[in-house]
Length: 135
Figure 1 (cartoon, rainbow, N blue to C red):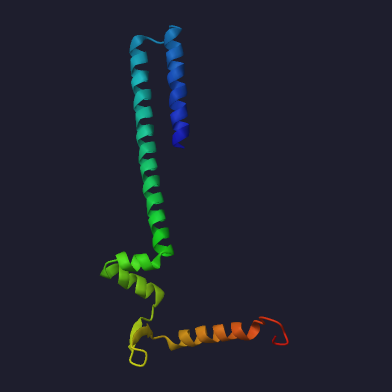
Figure 2 (figure 1 turned 90 degrees about the vertical axis):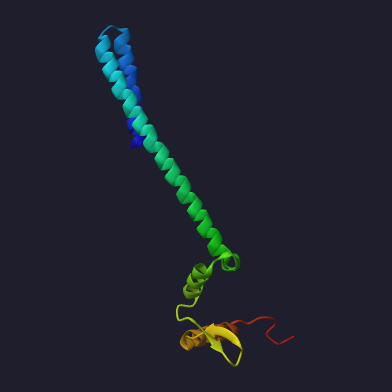
């Protein structure tokens, strides 16, 4: 849309110049039209610059987000308390509780953990690695 307006302004500018050269426009009309076309071109260029700046900002944010997603360890190390809390609750929505048995923090959601263990057990049961006779 903006590039169409920019092209239209350039075309209008060329027509105005051609009409002035051919003597079809008075100097007053030429000055008024030239000023209007110049203002239109300036507005379009300003809007294009704003869009370019927004695009650059969005690209930078996307790149930063992708880096945070890919490198969770770095995000945890470099994050402040709020970022670490957000990361922990994103990974463990039920929260982490301290286990006296293991002396570590682990997920509270036993249903989830049991499902994960069952999934891995089914993978092991379904997979047939090696030679069938056990050699």
